[in-house]
Image 1 (cartoon, rainbow, N blue to C red):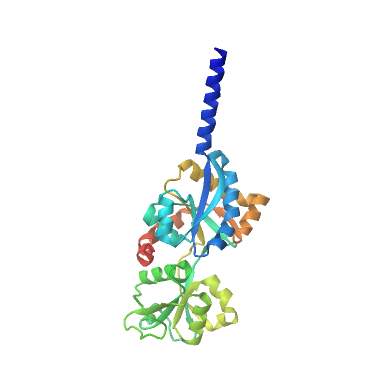
Image 2: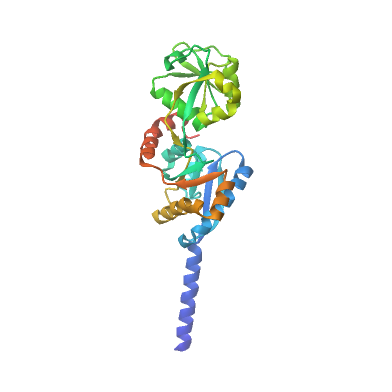
Length: 298
């Protein structure tokens, strides 16, 4: 009997340990980029630190997954191949619309929790109101830039500005609408406005002040958008509530330890994470439909 009992207990513990091991898995953090190696190096220490804080949730390691575009990230999240998605809030909204991901935290990047975009012109342009943009050309940065395209275009459209895409800054200007082009870079946007290649430009106010330098005095702010978070953290729709809550707690406490602050600094000089304020959530919810209409699921 003792032999049978010992054999039974041995089989029980082997089964328990195997079952416990099967439940253990990696925490996979993702973002969207075409610079896979660079982003992986940036995100991996962050993923590994969080994984170490979530061992009670069955997490044993941290991994990084870089998606090609919005549609690819939505697919990875919906399949549970990515657990945590870190990106700008407007891109995150487009992803959420496709897969049902949930925003759980706000990222303070370089000490800044939120930002707003501005539309700017040369002081001597004669443009004094949004109505004056009719028949003019505005330069945005690129199609997936939250501060340099999505946010300013959405808010201007809400103010009644109609847009017409142009093939380039020298193309024929529209009559009743504002023509727009992509400069590819904030510095190009500023230079094009200063040289008169385009009539107006759009980007974050902090970016404009930083990049314009002494030329800032030659520019005038025509319009300022509402503020939105710099970045947000989203989780897969398959993520259990317990893991989601534990993740938020781990993120919110990172800045309280020396090791956490070291990892945050290496993660593009992140200051801390916190919960998304309710008013900010409401505003982002209002943005989802028009933002998705602008950038679709590419």
